[in-house]
Amino acid sequence: MDRPTYEIVGELSRFDERDSLFSRERLIPSSPEEQAYHAAHPELSEIDRRIAAFIQAVNQPEGSTSQMDAALYNATFGPIVGLALPDIVDGEVAVTRAEVSPAAMAARIKALARRLGADDVRIGPLNPAWVYSHRGTPPFFSDSDHDYRPNPPHFSGLPEGYRDLQWGDPVEIPHRYAIALAFAQDRDLLSTGGTPISDFEVGRAYALAALVATQLAAYVRALGWPARAHHLRNYGVAVVPVAIDAGLGELGRCGYLIHPRLGTNLRLACVTTDLPLVLDPPVDLGIQDFCAKCGKCITNCPAGAISQGAKVVVRGVRKWKIDPVKCLLYWGHLGSACTICQTVCPWSRSRVVRRVSMHIPFARRFLVWADNLVYGARFRPAPPPVWSR
Ligand code: SF4
Ligand code: SF4
Image (cartoon, rainbow, N blue to C red; front, side):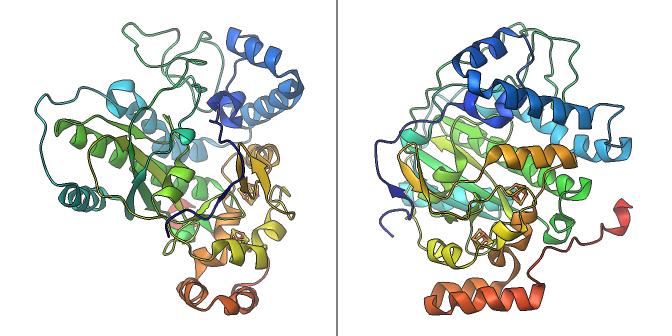
């Protein structure tokens, strides 16, 4: 396609990472950041306080998360923080530039990314509208050294020599291109549905994504071109629209990217750069029509977070939008990421559904019916694997 399937209906405006629920949940009560944010957004004060208290209560040492489960979480999500350090996601660029044709370089980048562990890689333009406007996460430091957090800062206070952005600083990423990376999750582990095991699998995919993105960015910088990795613990761009522009898939009703081979069962990362590369076009897989006829994630979402209604306009883009507060409160209730909408999505389950839907559009209603018949209309959690019991 010559353009992505989301609809631009107004002026695009950049997302402020401070507005992300994951950023708000980490605001330390009475800290200067928390006071500044809620002075500007008093209507969010109560719900943010509720979410933070809820999630932290579940994750407290004496909370409902067992030591065995916490160990699984720490094994996967924990080391990602080290890959988020400023000198790891970005860094010095080699003085000498390798001169290679954009087509040959794009082919090499894709081969390397796959060899490093990505399940798919495509290259698109970096729309400046997808660059965050302000930094919202405090990943490495905190003014408080007594506050227990599920994702604790690694330092108390600002480390000497720290040179990355701090909370509230404007974000500037002037790169022209984005290398979008997809990482598959194990469907059997994800199907345990909102358990420490599905959470483990989410963290495993995110950790691999962080490693590959940082390795790829280091490779490009060694070729003499600027490059910055974006992954779970250090985003400077919104990776879903970046991936859509690169043609990795389309946005589904459940808020996840839907990939032609992996469905929604994946995690994303990307590398932004100025390295000249041949770009891939965006794709139309028929997802907008399929989701309009399906709605299986709506009926299975335990939090009622997925909209039954029409698309809405968000910062200039008309799209389906989930309710992140309901979703995250449910995660807090579980003590782990939920993943049910990813698991029940017919595009995640069946190669036949994906193939037939892409090539025979009028069969889509039938495919939804057939998916319900074969796999059931309601989510049934799979038992955890033997090794985890
Ligand atoms: S992750 Fe779970 S709670 Fe969140 S939207 Fe999906 S099904 Fe609903
Ligand atoms: S479950 Fe159905 S409606 Fe939801 S994202 Fe998947 S295809 Fe779209």
